[in-house]
Amino acid sequence: MMPPRFPVSAEQIDRVVAVFYAAIRKHEVLGPVFGAHVTDWPAHEAKIAAFWRNAILYERSYEGSPMQAHMRAGNVHAEHFPTWLMLFDETLRRTLPADSAAGWSALAHRIGAGLRMGVENMQPMRGGPPVLR
Image 1: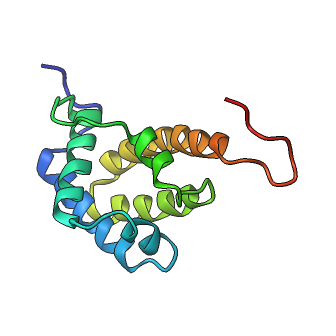
Image 2 (image 1 turned 60 degrees about the horizontal axis):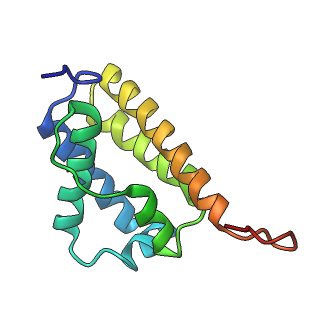
């Protein structure tokens, strides 16, 4: 069994996910983006917690493709990611010890950069040439 990427427990992951999505549901921009797709918040939170347990604790409990989910959504835009990361960082700082929060934040920023790039590359440039695939 591999050690976690940084010191965090499955229970802490569940807590961060719950606190974060409580903030998301109240957010004036991101709340409607998520609300357009999430009909079962407990199931969504369980799936995202499984994603993070896989990414941090190396559990194999997550199945899915975050990139495909974000691209399929249709209302997720590159400009949403800085706000998402800001809220996530705030949640991490309020919920975890500093070393765990810093490690998780760095991982979230790497993942967020990849997702943002994927979403951005799928959006046609206004006034520019079409994206050919």
